[in-house]
Length: 209
Length: 229
Image (cartoon, rainbow over all chains, first blue to last red; front, side):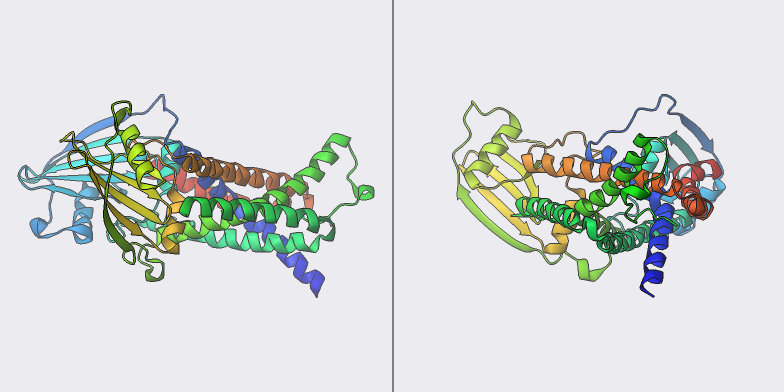
């Protein structure tokens, strides 16, 4: 019975670990970019500009804000061929203009809609893989919960990011069990566990007190 | 069937070149040694990531439950030998007995008024110094343990969209390099697990399925979405 449980945990540790390893790599590699506020320069970073006319805009546009505004603008953006996660929409009342940032990991699009002319200027910038990793690492993030995750794929990403956390917790707990079974490694493991705990709590205490 | 996590006695070491056997042996050992050392760091970043991704979870609310203190103190105006805003901020903090990461905040319109923020996990200081009156006002916000956990996740001292901020507190640098070390440790753990999996011929096919599935889904978000849309 115990042997069967051990084998089950061992196999789950292996398969779950293999499944989440690309996600762990994504989060780990993007840490270097975020910690050092640096992104590798892309030799081929491209930017394109396009103008779309005769746009159908939602009728109650001036009365909308936040998520309802984003939801109302989605069909307009789709018609203009722009898809992705819509960020904070700036409504420049005087200029009768809407500035809409739209993001797909690795691509940033800014749509400027002239409400009077019903015309959109779309600037698309391909930002590359490193930027995509950073975008995914920070998504959905702590800001703007009312407006964020308005694109299906980014909502799916939130599920994946959450799942990665739960699976990491499983991997670590099952890893502790698998290590504990190895009697010969207990003392060295305990020393390392203690050293890690001391480093972690020591640093957290020094930072916060 | 040998497992990646089972101990191998010297007599059971795989045949072949000695180097390969030693590599397998140490790869396995280092995999769980690294995991045990990084355990608490891993739990912190995993759990805080989850909390940050769910700002509507009321149990983890920190900012709205903060405790505020507001006080004024007399100060000695930094002399001409103190250069720049950062130097002046450091001198004021020394006088106040506050330590933390100084954030670049506002542009100075009046040379006698100097406002800046200082942050450390759990504490936020909003400092307004009036050089003419030789007084400094400190608004201190202290957040709960959830707030500490959330700030630890993002406490790098730099911001990608604001190049003016740079690390100026030794502990920020120490924490930032710890983040690097944890990330490097995780990368090592992934690579070492892939190596251990490859050493298990019976599990190659089933393992390839899960690894392939994970790579496919992850690849969709990293590069696939740009191709599709």
